[in-house]
Image 1 (spheres, rainbow, N blue to C red):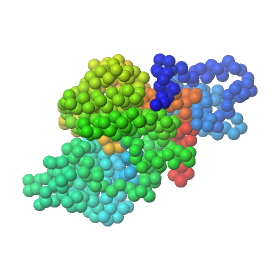
Image 2 (image 1 turned 45 degrees about the vertical axis):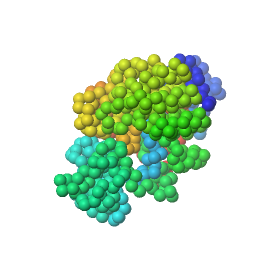
Image 3 (image 1 turned 60 degrees about the vertical axis):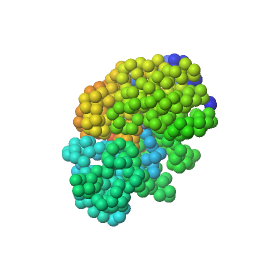
Image 4 (image 1 turned 30 degrees about the vertical axis):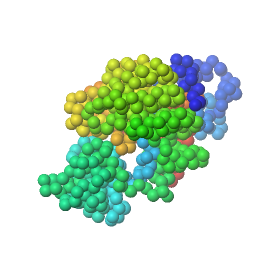
Length: 577
Ligand SMILES: [Zn+2]
């Protein structure tokens, strides 16, 4: 396997980035503009009169940024950037707006979402139940009788600030009498109307369909199904599996709508678990055509589900090649599961990894270390994290993992001593706060313990390298400003306080940009607005650093750029995009 240069270098030997300050000093020393022009490429585009939140190592703020091709060539004052302009340089007046680096989600199931996106009625960011119902009514009217109306996760009823109630079968019958309806709350439960129940063969006098988990179909005292299917991912899966995906000829349009929504939210790069999908071919086609508007860093590899499958997994790992791509599409991690029996269910309260299971887990993880591959593994519950760290410490003695950026993902139950062990191993934490929508459910399950899930300030203060992901679009919502609002206020979508460990807004932004660039092996190209880096940035409608914390979730990007191309412009007519 070929390691990327930055990985072989290791962190401590990383060349110091050319910062904005360095550039300004250079300009001041060089003197006459003519000399400057000879040395400095004439930019294609200059954004000026803004508040450029560079998120460089000093968290410096500038006024203007100059871009040539797909790269940032200079950052500094309005005056300095104006001097670089040539006759053909395009100029954008930011009118005082804040600009941040393109946001990176280190873990979102993006390609899977493309297979259903345009058919879903998404509730991400919808904090009014009344509005959610209006959306359902509008969809029923638009699609006509008989068509499915559904969503697959990304919300819970506790996010409805006006009326945090779940949906009843009768209510959904009234909203869409002619359509089957299925509304899935994260991986926690699904609400069905009468038509959906009939379609699935779930009826008063009939036994449960065999693929539904025993006890997951809620019935009243008379045996009549209430419309609620409940009980973690295994309970919700049979419903999602029955819902119609987009047709093959709609897949590209659906994926395009999905990427547009990501750009509108300010996202420019995603760590993607599961890239074996047909959808990846579409992204590769867009890349070849120069119109791929989001960067995809794949976390891939089939997990063994039983001891019998482990040998096959070992062969697959020995053949696996990573880092064959580029800054648009690449495979970077084995993950997100190593051995399926040790994959914690999302709403489990406690795990009990057995030594037999851990032995299989270690065989696979050992092979990953031996092959020199980065690993990104789902690890949520306290005892699972401890057990994995025991194994990794043993593996590390045989095959050091120091420079492989092994990452534990989700880690809502992680604690200070585990973070310390991870730091010693040179490991990383991909933090996916499920409580952003599941805060209510987690408090029901964990009681006061949920106030420390995730323990954000403990993670920040530990000094470990860590970054934010959402684990969207089913387990969680995908909007980065909702995650940043949660991190700074401790409040879930909708406004209820659900965690006590919050962090500062600078640290939160760093974890969604520069630190994530590191987590996806792109620290030399992404994550900060600096000369030499790729021109991925987001212009905001208000200043993330100064608005009241409660308004962070309402921030709307007005312009998003990927590799110097404008991929979202709030002021452009949709057809021009
Ligand atoms: Zn996971």
